[in-house]
Structures are given as structure tokens and as C-alpha cells.
Image (tube, rainbow, N blue to C red; front, side, top):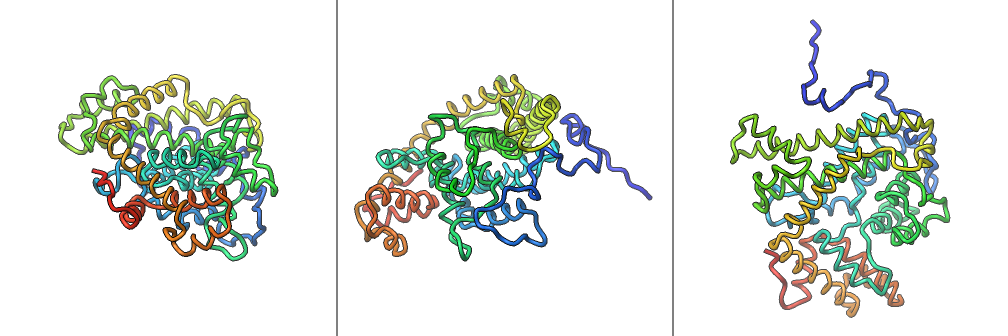
Length: 412
């Protein structure tokens, strides 16, 4: 007996699988290729069971910096509740969406997943508040940028392998991390450019060009993931109400669809119904627009995508405008909510205090970091201290502050 599985109606409407026969699920010629990869800084024997990009994904998954994302803030601190996103769960959600988009566009799913999992490795504790505090503390020493720090981690700071520092990732993975926000034009992305210069003696990352399609897919997946899960977390935290969302682009139609299904206002299924519909709609828009752009460009190789005049994986103009309006709503109603602002101001002070103390007092540093600080000039010492502070989890930073100072903010 043959059982035919019917595709759900909303999946069909999203365009999932449209135009993809079973044999077409393999990557297209314009996808990044592990076979034609530009290689690694340190040559290594091929793995008998994995492609180069699968290997990179696995190296990121097993990195200590990836595990620490478990206790790093996305929007809400880890101790506020078990159901809010952390940097780790955010990265996993980005990876799922990046794989979906990449499969529909016949890109290399493993490279997209590796980039999605690695894109936030460089975030310090306490989310953007921690990053801003660390950037201010580093103002006289080159500043701090979490994208640049992600690149530092995978090229220098992970110490797992004999014979080299970092993860020795493939060129295509490094390129995608460096260009997470697009090409680095003059005066933009200077922090990333400085880190990239340290590895470009091996091979240029071509920072002025677009990244391959997989990196573009991972970047859009990042936008989709945080726009939807910050609505989810904001609702669960009581910072916004469903009634506030009716007129908000991208969210309003999902709210109305959930209402028409008759899901009660107090039912947690209502929130999930809203966010899953948002994700479906944004993936549909991205895939539809990107297929049209690929058809117009007709790229034969990944380099054709890199040389394009604009992004190939993108939202249509109206969806991009809707997403910008949704981000503005989240900024005003969630990220700048008085409750969040108050807590994050205190969190930023913890990061600033720790940086100053470590800079001024060798004894405050752990022994391994103290040995590494010996003889460094102020600029290099500041970068070492920034590496140490940015690698801390929320709870470790709080514990360190309690160890080194008489009073520590409660962050509640």
C-alpha cells in the first residue's frame, strides 16, 4: 500500500518545494561548494564523512564560545524565566530558518547553518547593553564590535586544536562571518576590517564584494528570527499586548488569522500561532523575491553572486519596508521599555566596572589571563581584557562583579 502525504495548505501557500523536483534538492551551480572551496589557512586532510562546510558547522557547535551562548542575554536576562530566548536559542532558530531558505534556493544548507550558528559568538554578556558598554570602555583602544569579535573567536581565541589557534574554518565560512551585514564599504565595518586584516595574509576575504548566497540567507534568517521571537518574548513578558499589534506590519495579519481561528486570548497557542505565521510569511516573501533575482542574474557560480550589484537573497521592497516598521515598533516598545532600560543600564555598569578593574589590577584576572597580560602595552592589554569580558556569560559576569566589588546591581 502506498501512502501519499499531502502538503499542508499554509506550506503550499508559502511556496515550499515549489519548482523543486526530488532530484533538484541538491545545491545549484551558484551555491558555494566545499569541493571547490578556497581552502583553509592551515591545510588539513579531508574528512572521510563530512564536507568542509559540515565540518565547520560541527567545529562551531563544539566550540566553548558556542556553549557559553546558553547564558548570554538576547533581550531578557537568563534568570527572568526559562522560556525567554538566549543567544543560544536565537542562534538555533536562525540556523533552522537559514536551512529552510537555503534549501528552497538550492544553496548549500551546511554552510548557511554554520554561519547562522556562528554569527553571534562574539556577543558579550547582557546583549547590546554589554556591547555598548564594552565599546565605550574600548574607545581609546580601537572599540568593540560583536561581529569583529566573532571573527576573532574563530580565527584566534578558540584553543582546541594542535598546531593552530581558532577553528581553522574554510574561506567561505570566514567570508560569510566577515560580511554578515553585507560588503564593507569605506568607512563602514572598520572593526571587522581590522580583524580580517590579521588573516588576509593568507587570502583576501574580498570585503568590498557581496558574500555568497548562503551568507545572505543566514543574515536574512537572523532578521526573521529575532523579529518574530522578540514579539513572542515581549508578549510573554507583558511588555506588549496582542491588542497593540493589530496595526503593526507583518504582525497584524497574523493576529487577525489567529483571531479567526478562535484561539482564546489567554491561550499560549495564540502567541505561537501569531509567530509561526509571521515566520511563514517572511520566508515566503524572501524565497519568492530571491528566486526572481536569481532568475534575472542567472549566476553560474557563487562568484557571480559575489560580483552582483546588489544582494541576491533579499525581501521584496514592500516586505523590507514592513520589516523596518516592525523593528521600529520593537525598538520603541520592547528594547526601550522602561523595565528593560533600567535593567540593561545596570548590566552595562557591571561590564564597565569589570573592564576598569581588570585593566588596573593584574590580581583581578584569572591566572591564565594574568600570564598573558604580562608585558603588554595598554592597547594590547585592553584588547586582551575585552576578549576576557566579552567571553563571559551573564551569570559569570555577575559572579565576578560580586567577587571584586562590595555592591552589585540586582538586575531585576
